[in-house]
Length: 241
Figure 1: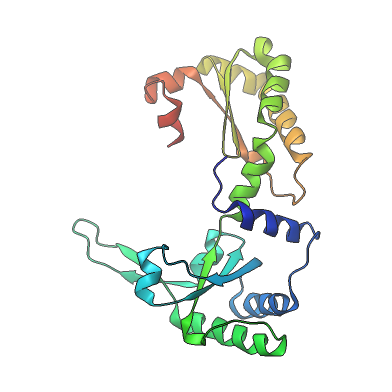
Figure 2 (figure 1 turned 30 degrees about the vertical axis):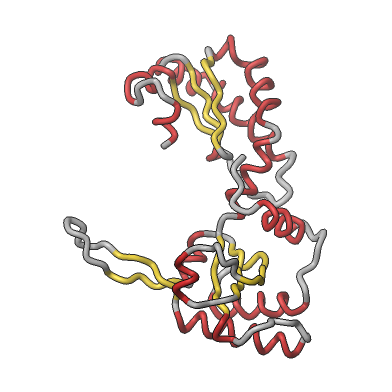
């Protein structure tokens, strides 16, 4: 599977499973941010900006960054501002920029708590950049599905391939797509209950490893090779784009 940040993911996963505790400074910072801005924070990472990092951070002139791992893109977006930009043909175009007031509030609180907890920030407050990563949930769902996908595929095909006329099972990230051969197969299996049985089987199997209870039945869907051939040039790549 593709990782946005494997090390950060595993640390956050351990925290959410209550195997590892946040440092006291970050526990209090988490409470402050969640109360002040109405978002959910999973974890923090504070580190020096590498010289090879993106030009965006270099242009900002920041030497350290405080990364807040938040629960969703929606939470991340709450911490940003939309700024209108001119793009010919796109009258409502905008870009997202970090809210400087929210940045300052979080940095000021972080510096205040660093004194309280004797936590070394190693720099001036004006040299700290706050960013918000929202990738954890997607990485987590991919993680719990990825290492079981071969077993899951075999389980379903052994039970239903012949009776339901399944062509192929495709697992992309955390989504499971069951492809029948024809649209008629798809309709028939929905009516006779086999699609529901397959969905239940997939769901129950995946939920066995879902420690954080984030996986949903909606992530298991059905289609047909006929639709793939007629509308996506027979390409799974085009289908999943």
